[in-house]
Amino acid sequence: MGGQVSVIVGHLTAAELSAEWRLYGEGMPNTLDFRDLGEGIGDATAVLRNNAASAGLDAPVPTCPGWTVRDLVTHQGLIHRWATANVRGEEPRPDAEVEAEAAASVDLLEWLDDGLVDLLNALAAASEDLDVQFFLFDAPPPRQAWTRRQCHETTIHAVDAMAAKLGRAPRSDELWFSPALARDGIDELLLGFAPRPKYGPRRPEPAEIAITTDDGLGAWTVSLTPDGCTARVGASDTAGTRVTGSARGLYAGLWNRGRSYTVTGDAAVLESFLEQLRVSW
Image (cartoon, rainbow, N blue to C red; front, side, top):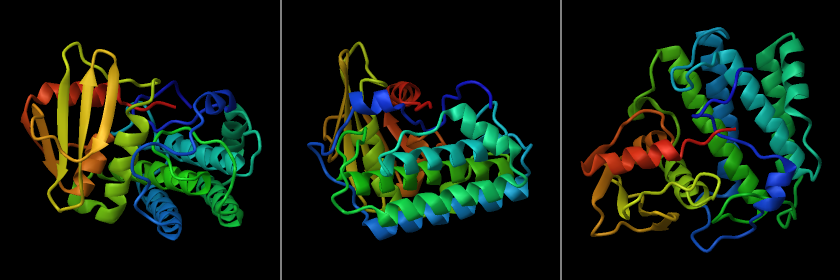
């Protein structure tokens, strides 16, 4: 595949996982149960697969500039295999080896399916008290955390596959996943990814962003300072930037997949935050 793409959800090496291991955070655990998250992985892979087949493997992906559908499918299959190894306590295979396997496969979409089945089997076989490393703040126990991460990883990339078919980012009313899944994904992004030193969104002058779902599924506040970023559940009354939208629209938008939300106040603060939070792999 090509070089680093700034809108692609990332993965970590074993060394990075060791450096950033988190079993629990100080905030709220995820809001979906293990079964719902597992179903979310399967549903999103089906959406990704169907839209990839319809668009064609050589089609460009508007939400991942520079990538084709082939790159997208290869990346998702690689990430499923990487997560499976971590759940099993194994060392993941080198990216180049997995990418070469994908390139040599007779049917890339079947290769994607094979990785999905292996991932779901690994998660189903894992004990509830699984003791392996995980890398996000505000994380539930590892089995749940890995299932949650792969649910949202695959969901966002299925949105990318829809974009390849449509030729644009899909609107929130075109998305298949539930508002509850979207709410959980916003929680993971803001409380798990945003505070990590690897990204560390910041501003020279302190600022707050209040993010509120208009379908009653929650609110958050992101605080930006010269030293970094913190996030918490609940919308600040004094935030200078306010973002409102459906849970699905906010979820896709905060992952830089379209802009299905309304901003009042200083929109530049939000744009700077989203630009700095582009997760790369």
